[in-house]
Image (cartoon, rainbow, N blue to C red; front, side):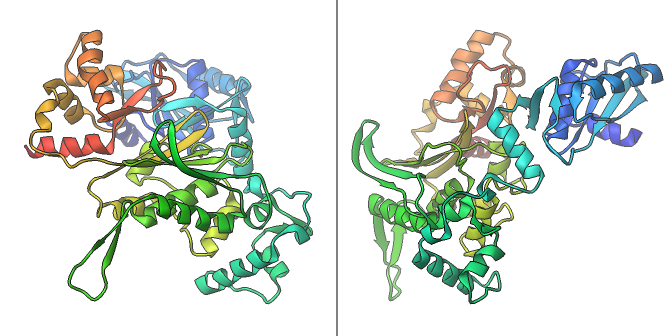
Length: 458
């Protein structure tokens, strides 16, 4: 155990590790947050930067801490608490297991772990977390509409594609097939079945823009989802440019403005992970130099945008039946490989920068086309901006980033380092809708990462 404590002290605070100088109500919030995600360890008597300070502790104090945690959490949590002698100081460890039935509350509030911070859950995420923990989801609830109201032709075509994909053995009876994949329960159709094959109020609104306030063309698609995806792809293809490359072979090569597999992946991601309790449409905006996908619904299970961009995550599906349907049709995988495939496809488009973020209940994915850097572009960036970019690793709070850069004047750092790096798109805030949040952190964009690579090469 002592060896593992030494190993933990070499690490920074993370999804599963927190340092606290003393035990208090914030410690119990972290216990609840760890219980609601993947578990973790809290070290008491350690500063935020990992310095061992020590704490007064004995078996009687451990009983008091255990009792406080039990009284302030619901369901009651009983973590493993121990103390350890390290460098002539005593520190305590609180080891928290992921709780099977979520969410766990702390003083009537609910928290989840995202990166190295605790975030209070809004009501919709509380409901969502509970459904997921009992292996259910919102799209599995039954609706009042009848089976006869679903489009039989679309159902027939759907199962034909399932048969071709070969991921499931089907019956001759389409009703039996609908039951088999969970779209019919107790002779009632699920909300997922209505979304896939029926009339609903869910929209995919796509616009082709010249500027932010000049719309060239747009379409609002409210078809059953299995056909809406193809309709959306058709409109997007009409709205982006296509050129041809002749390589000496018999057939010319099509070069789309954006890689179509990436566009389809982002579209499916928006459709499958949308929070359908929110009536807001999926919004797709197409400009001359970028395309964005915005849909209601943030990340689940404590995932952060950084996890997705790094490919370091386990797939979690907000709408399990929708995910299963599109998986069986061969449209997606269910192993968390979507963002990996996006990055692989974008390698053939060096001018394309991809970014993903969340804010106030929405997710946003953007592909931006940038002009390739020329030798005269780099000198336009100040030495301060270059130093910030080359220094920033991972996701850091402002004070830690400022310390790493070596600047003591807070206003000078903001004006000469932080502000221009944000304006040029080299870095972004992790909580853009709350720029002054005490949990605010900064990370490099893909543009910033490319600049950092060039600076390191030089």
